[in-house]
Image 1 (cartoon, rainbow, N blue to C red):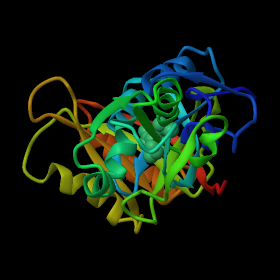
Image 2 (cartoon, helix red, strand yellow):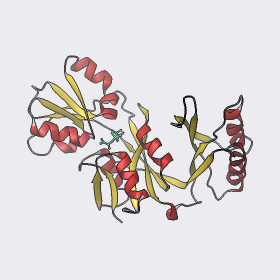
Image 3 (cartoon, protein in one colour):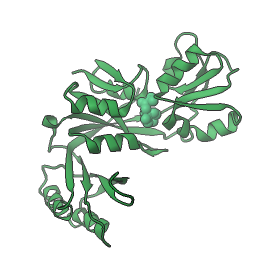
Image 4 (cartoon, rainbow, N blue to C red):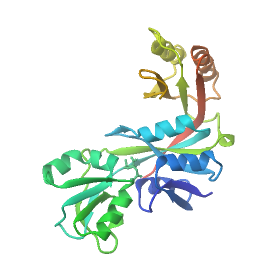
Length: 268
Ligand SMILES: O=C(O)C(=O)C[C@]1(C(=O)O)C=C[C@@H](O)C=C1
């Protein structure tokens, strides 16, 4: 089954997507990937959701909150960045903003006066380095093939650097089976204890939350929606009961059940 993910070839998203299928096609943004699945153009997409150093990928959170899609799997990969250039004499470092941020301490220590250029992906940064001798790219070391050399390896600020990806699919692929589930809740309400009530729906049933993230609704300042990951499958009675409570709390808003899924660790 063809998978759409962030391109060009050689991104970390590409590596994660190969865990789903070797037939991978590319888009230049996360929003375009989610839109390609939402519109039915593609059956599967792979998007980064969260990084162990930099936290949530907010473009992904906002795109999946707006779309009618399912999450069918999560893929976790270690992220080990290299600095790739034609020679050590470069003036600019180009990469995805997440990758630049994950290597912030290294860049400040080794290249404090170099210019930084945020591009659409790590592989796009490596392409810039291939075209221009004054540019170095940060990306996976395997992208050095050809005329680029690996100037430095393992330059991420923490060796434990890892990114979590969601496999997204049409709503028809939504599953109630799996060890984890994701929902997006828009309460469209604001009163003391609202968040406590949302959390109690899970705590009362002994359901562990693995992530909760608030994002602006875009409707008015101070109005939020909540992305919640919890460790239970939607097939479980306790999960259904918790979500019944959540639906009541969000009676003036909405609750999007993105689905249940299992976790897969991919090394490459
Ligand atoms: O640019 C890439 O290679 C991507 O796949 C995107 C992305 C991200 O958005 O977080 C994925 C993994 C790494 O954390 C760095 C960048």
